[in-house]
Amino acid sequence: MTASAPSSQLPPSARLSAAPAAFPAPMYPHKATEEQHRERRIRTFQPRRGRMTKAQAGALDRSWERYGLAIDGTPLDLPQLFGGLPVTLEIGFGMGDTTASMAAADPAMGILAADVHTPGHGNLLQFLERDGSENVRLAAGDAIILLRDMLADASLAGLRVYFPDPWPKPKHHKRRLIQDSFLDLVLPRLAPGALVHCATDWEPYAEQMAEVLAGRPELENLHPEGDGSHWLEPSEHPAGSVPGYAPRPDWRPMTKFERAGLAKGHVVHDLLFRRR
Image (tube, rainbow, N blue to C red; front, side):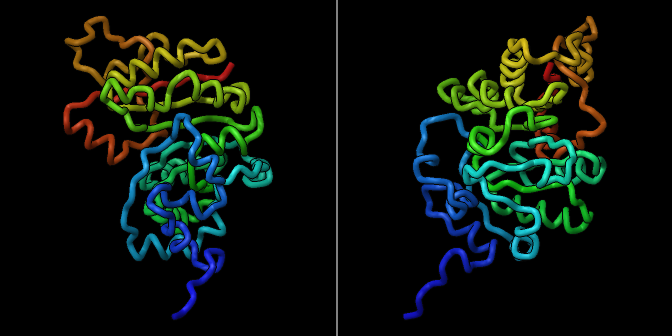
C-alpha cells in the first residue's frame, strides 16, 4: 500500500478540497484550530460544497501561493501585504466576478477577499490571472477569525458585504451577519473615513441592516434621504425617496446573483455608511 502524501506536499487545489465533512473546505488545511472552528458565534458563511472545474483547480495550483492566504489566526501586516495601498475587506465574494471587476477598475485600492467556497477561489484566481491584477489577496476561511485575530485596529479603508445569506426564516435571523455583535468586531478595525457598503435583495434583511447600521453613532449614513428610490415602483413611494437607502454605485457591478433576484421580482437595496 502506498502511503498518502503529507498535506503540506499536496498542491493547493488538493489541500483546499481535503477538509473532512465537518469543516468548510478551505479552512481545515490552513491551521485554524479545532477550538476556533467549534466556537459558538456568528459565522460569515453557510458551509457548502462544490465541484471544482479543471480550470479552477489549475488556477489554484498556479496562483494560490501568489494571491492566497490562510485564515489561521496569524496577524497580518496589511501595508506589507498590499504594498501600502488602502485595503477594503470583502466578505463573501462568490465566484469572484464582481471582485475582479472592481479590482481592475480601481488598482489603487487593495481588496482582501474572504470566502470559504473553494471553486470560487479558483474562479477568482482565473480572473486575476487574466487581468493581471495585483491588488487582491484571497483569504480562505471564516472572516470572523480574520477580523478578530488577524487585523489590527483602524487597518481597513472599507468593508463590503454583498448579498449575504438572508436566513429568511424567523428562527434563523440570529444567524444573519449584519447585527450589533458583528459591528462590535468590525468597527474598531475601520479607519476614520472607511466606507461600509452592504447590498441585499431580501427586503426584510435590508430593513434590519439599515436599522443596525443607523443605530451606531460611529457610522454616518451617506444617503439619509434615500436616493435609492429608483429600485422601487414610483407608486410605492410617491414622495420619491426611500429613507436610508443608496443608489447602486456605478463602481459596484451588477452580479449574477443580483440579476437572478431582480428576475424574481426582488428589490435590491444598497446601504453606504462612513466611519466617523
